[in-house]
Length: 134
Image (cartoon, rainbow, N blue to C red; front, side, top):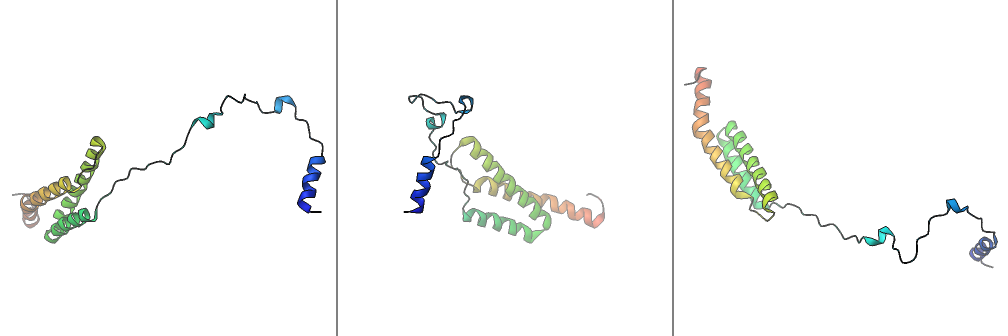
């Protein structure tokens, strides 16, 4: 005799315990589907943002060039590039289609680079040398 078969036979021979009707689960007619059967689950499509390696190269070249001149131009240029990236992400949320990542960031970065280098730095250097604005 096999031990697994003996266990099955013993379980079948044990009397079934009666469950009171109030503790028994409700039975639904066969034609009514359970709520879980109404839904089909499909794998969730995750829409992600992708930024190419070339974008990071252009950002880093611009910021590195700004850092070669003065630390203030570096900080302003870095902030401008990040603002441009945020503006691009904002536009992406509005238009819901692929957008190039470079134009807004690079335009703001170059604009603020030149504004800082030719307008802000001369006043800053004047203030450092004399102690008051020109």
